[in-house]
Image (tube, rainbow, N blue to C red; front, side):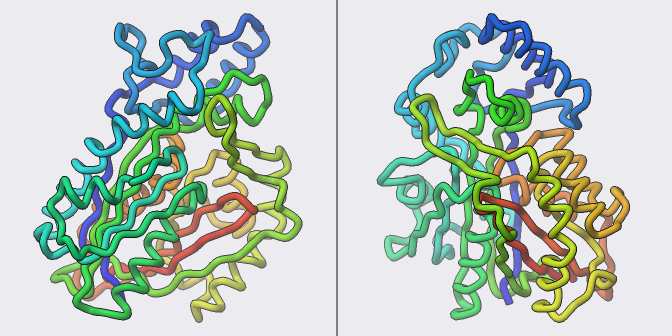
Length: 361
């Protein structure tokens, strides 16, 4: 089985109090109704701070990178230029820290997997990282692009398969999401929620076949699709950035189907709900987490790590689940005799559910 040797997370460099979205909306929209809607979300919502890799959202910034005015928004091409400009510095920092934390050396990394759904270019981040980190010229490189909030599970599954096939492999996975690059001024409820909810983050981890002391170990992965949900969630490339589409009935669909779907998934893991010690659920939003709790009839305390990640950092798309897992990994010190089952899951376009069973022992 593959062991997670280290997890390193980097929230966006610039902390942004959620109330800042009100002044941005005042600049972006002449329509006072849109400002009122944003204020209502802020009052009712769980997020109290976002983090951005762009300085543009800070209140007194002079040199903005992409949003020189919130009244006139940049093209998708301009946004992707900034993503490429920032990506290597951020991802390189997280990668170096993850390799060092895993007590490894760059030369020992045999595989590199990058993932993102907020930025694309080629040759991509995986090529740039391999040069900057001075990884082996025979390094095997992979990338997972544009798969939504559950992309980290695809990267983790691939790393798991690689290590299962060769216990000499050591895999570095790196995710970078700059959701703040996709601020949009359309007046849909979907866009309003996306502007409020999404934030920036980067995460890197190293996986290998062996590690001394308490460690997280990936046991198995499962995929499932919610019935009749294809049009409930989408992520599309527009002329003014990438556009999120969320149907307002999505939480109800999750609540209605999640119990049966999760129990079916746990059966494939040869487990039942009572055997799960920890839940690491991607905090797609307050309603998503509440739907999960109600469908499984579990108290919100079971999802405390997800709730706190959402409150402190917002939804950082695919890297968020690694922030949640890092909270568990850095939690109370475990005794070597203990073994703890973690069920991790994230939702993505489709609507699809990606999940993993992880043993912390």
